[in-house]
Length: 249
Image 1 (tube, helix red, strand yellow):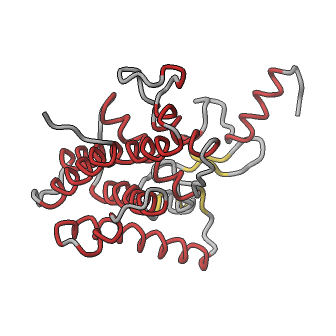
Image 2 (cartoon, one colour):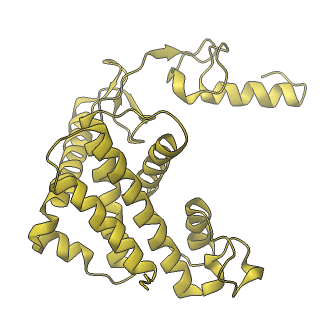
């Protein structure tokens, strides 16, 4: 019988991702799909291990069922909330973006149609790797960050993580100096969507930029809730609030 604890299970998924990045040189959707699933699993298990260190009951969705070994464990999203509220663990904006992106891509893979370009995959993979290495070191005292730098078998991961870090820093600096108007990209969740070119300069996501009929602000269609309202998300909220309270604004 083989048994993995949470860290061993997370490491196995991470090494499985490394295998898909290093053993098969072909860049295709199948490889990217498996890597994204493995890295999402890795991050989720690290959350649970950090919760276990606070108290093993927090790993369960219903803590009253502790110490059951068959009760459902907490979801990744709820684990993150517990770490913040109960464990006092701080997640930076870049952490939140990494986790949101990998969660959305995993949901596409597991529950719907899946499509991804090589450029987008490199950003998504690099994004979550940056988080995994930081969290594993800072919150769990693991040596994965050092291994990323020193183990030849992990060299491909360095390429993805460093690509993302270098590209993101360069693009944000360039945008800051240029004064080009940007909004958060709905795909990679960075402030790198160029309103003029209608494209994210980090992950390459493209969509039309619209103008709100009320406040005249520019917005992206994918971030609003109503298909035909012609309102930005802020005006949508105001409109919905006014309608619910029989008010005008």
